[in-house]
Image 1: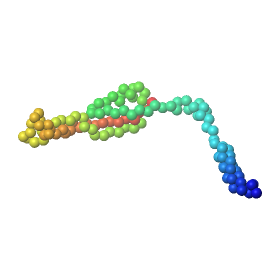
Image 2: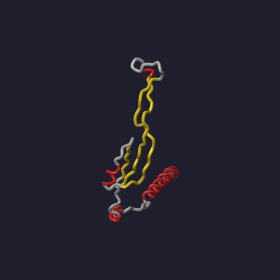
Image 3: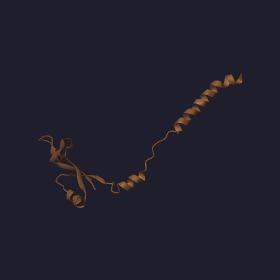
Image 4: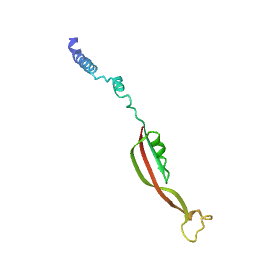
Length: 116
């Protein structure tokens, strides 16, 4: 009679043990990372992104050092700002509220993605 009362508990424990056993017995493929390193000794490549703004150009230094351009992009950028009075009658020295800052010189920003 005691066994009949404990039967549901035994089934739950058995299911739990069986499910744990099946999850631990799965075979996962093992990657041999040493073999991959030996096949491609030069697989480590360095990448770098650099930006030059407003008429600056220093890309030749990197190209002479052995870097190669993977991607080149350019976008418009404001190089300098200037302050102007908002109206003809306002004095920028006396009244700070009448000073407006607006772009003075607009240039180009070049973005390079380099690899060595």
